[in-house]
Image 1: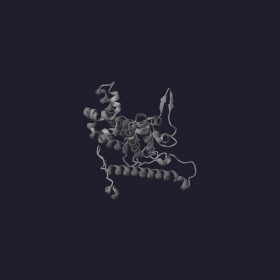
Image 2: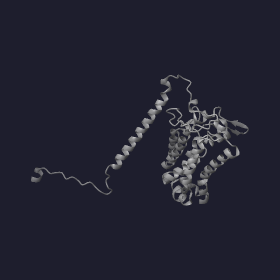
Image 3: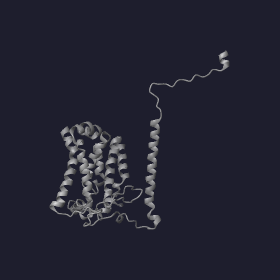
Image 4: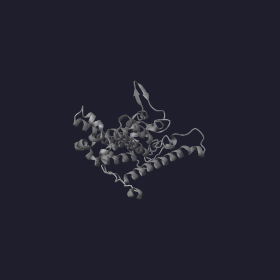
Length: 309
């Protein structure tokens, strides 16, 4: 999991895509996979009752569990629902971009994400840093900011700082507010100064969060740095192959069935996308008739009998 990247990803995307994306659905999409599941990884107390998943990693990233929220199809499904409600394709695909950015970023730890669910429950994981959510919020934070996780978030911190122009009032007025209908609606009730402050909030929260946790982990608590791949090694880690274990037949045919189905699904999706692009390219290259121009009528040749008459 990432502790600051999800706060900063939308600003990086905003910088590169400009008016082609709507910021609010982009930000909501970036938070969406963990919005209703992360609370139960660490545990939350309501009215004196503690609610916590028995197997946090399985609940967070696996199936059965809420791991489907980290799949690419989840972003597409919610994007389609947004389009059906608001009939705005920019809002729809902006959410998809944000959700995909989150899902792909979370493949960096030792558990990963079920990117191709429901075609397969395979967890795609690079294993660069340890997944230790089951140890509790503070140990998990200490581990994350002692391994390559904090380096990964640091890349987004630098990238976001290099994109500082997206924070200016002029950029907000000319680009962000123009492309996103939320700001036009909110502008009827709030001043521009308030809107700009709300727009900048996640940026400063992400920067402050990364800095504060880094100081806490190594100045206040003195956790040990371990920048080896999959580290830190001093924390109990959860791996992708420990989750989604099938209790049924384990023969090679059954074990490879769903990954194979996922592979076929990806091939079909690529073929469909390529077909759409080819058709669109052919239509763009086809000569178009200018408006107001009519094709010259072909005069029929009269027969010799008609000319003689």
